[in-house]
Image (cartoon, rainbow, N blue to C red; front, side, top):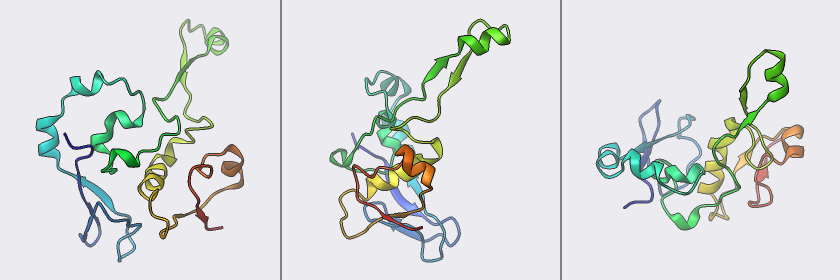
Length: 157
């Protein structure tokens, strides 16, 4: 089975298409590119039961739906399912016996809004000649939300 069913990158503005095997940041018109997939093939070859029985409790459990074509290019930083934390003290304040909260930020995972950026880093992992510029706030840098220890980045300030 294919590691990913990504077919191509598509510009939602001018409808230009780009190879998913190449590295692209933006379309020539300036728009971010969208990943398109071989959905009919994926639907016929991958089942919900197959995914639910996988032992990999991370983003890579759904690798067929990610734009990384080669399993050898996968880098994991401990990202996984969002943990649910039982909040007994807060629950007691509101008379709720089993109150759980989602913990959306952690040192390794970073804020959920950076998930797409993590995938962009992974896509560029083997491309020394194509640094990935990104904005980084001081607070994010202190928390280690970006993957500096794993990848060398060129920052825009």
